[in-house]
Amino acid sequence: MFRSHTNGELRLANVGQEVTLCGWVQKMRDKGGMIWVDLRDRYGITQLMLEEGKTDANTLQIARSLGREFVVQAKGVVVERLSKNDKIATGDIEIKVSSVEILNPAKLPPFLIEDETDGGDDVRMKYRYLDLRRNPVRNSLQLRHRMAREVRNYLDSLEFIEVETPVLIKSTPEGARDFVVPSRMNPGEFYALPQSPQTFKQLLMVSGFDRYYQIVKCFRDEDLRADRQPEFTQIDCEMAFVQQEDVLNVFEGLIKHLFKTVKNIEVGEVSRMTYAHAMKYYGSDKPDIRFGMKFVELKGEERDLTSGKDFQVFDASNLVVGINVKGASEYTRKQIDELTDFVKRPQIGAKGLVNVKYNLDGTIKSSVDKFYTEEDLKAWVAAFESEPGDLMLILSGDGDKVRKQLNELRLELGNRLGLRNPDEYSVHWVVDFPLLEYGEEENRWFAMHHPFTSPKPEDIDAMMSGDLGKVRANAYDLVVNGVEVGGGSIRIFQKDLQSKMFEVLGFTPEEAKAQFGFLLDAFEYGAPPHGGLAFGFDRLCSLFGGTESIRDFIAFPKNNAGRDVMIDSPSPLAAAQLDELKIKSTL
Image (spheres, rainbow, N blue to C red):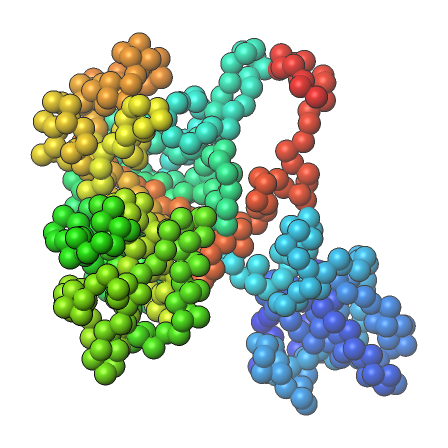
């Protein structure tokens, strides 16, 4: 062995021991009579000490030649440090070095390999193998490892079996864009990389494997952002002979297990809300419920407190809705203008923002005073259940659009007011999604989740009769702090109902058979009732790690253009390879 100990394990109890350490040089400090070297590996840092007149001259010479990131082996005796360092676990001891060997010298790194680095994202991505030596990145991957281990521990304890499913599969028209792989042995034909193992895990249920899971790599050729990568990892699960309640209970247990074992946090009750409730009161199907500010309608299905006052903005809108911001009535004109500019950004698209201040002295002032009387505004205050000191912020327009705009404003205020505490966690289910959504441009219905999601049993008649807008899905999403970390559904398991679903989605019987005939055939051989879900593992890791970007929790991620700048991928293929694949180069 090159080493007897790691650089993170020696303590005062080891004083007097002869040890051999290996690692990378973090820092070297030469004070003339004394030399100190910080030696780093993934376990920690140990200080090496050499002294003029006491350390061998050749060893001193080698030590003075060391540079950052040299790989070295050091031998010596553990001694107690005179000047202790309480910032590192080995800070009570150091190694009185007897010999040093350079195992491999190193070029000067392009950025500092320290917690606070001077390297930008592009440089660190290009030299990712160096970035991985930094504590924050290494800690993120260690967190990912612990979470994967605890996922397996929990599911193994409930008799789930881990089964690998194929990576080279068939492209299907529903869902996101596929990555495709040409087949050399079948010219002109292509495999697809799986967006999920959906149909395979359902076939496992038909096979009698009634509890399956897999921590699996999936692929989607879609536009990227901080929480998306072209390849990502899912905790993919399926269960047979279950109803929705069974699935929710098992995976509430998983999320509670992860919080307890990884973060030592007890998650309380996992609440539930319907999709309709989430959209009506939060404007989002993944609301952050760590704080209030539920939406209040001044004009909508329940009431109309705004029409007939010659304010055309409200009169022309089918929805006038707002939020009550506790204790914000003293916001300045500048602060109100900042919020107005925020909602008018192109990404949000609101035309303006109405504000009503319920002042501490009991007076009510608004930006629409010339249209509405004090009595009108008192009715608004009552609807919002406002108290002196509160600020009401109101938007208007078309229903779904304005709710989404108000959701963005609500989250922005949550950030500004410090209400979205990253150390506080709120976990809840959103259930009863619509089964289908209508695409106006395409003039057809699309599955809101995927074509294998079953309708709620009580809505099957509506589906069969063609009243498609009323059909709810037997589906559920798990939301943590406004982030959807997982979702799934009870599946269709009868051939007739699955065929009807394909028909609703615009498949001819021939197209359905060509694309999914294997699944329809399997349903005729005794398919059990089944359901499941998948967690976005990268996203779950980033949530536990307290960051928004999933790239920090992937060893070798792609950049925002979907490129691996370290290995320069994707890249062109040689003409000979293209010829083998019967693909004509476009370059």
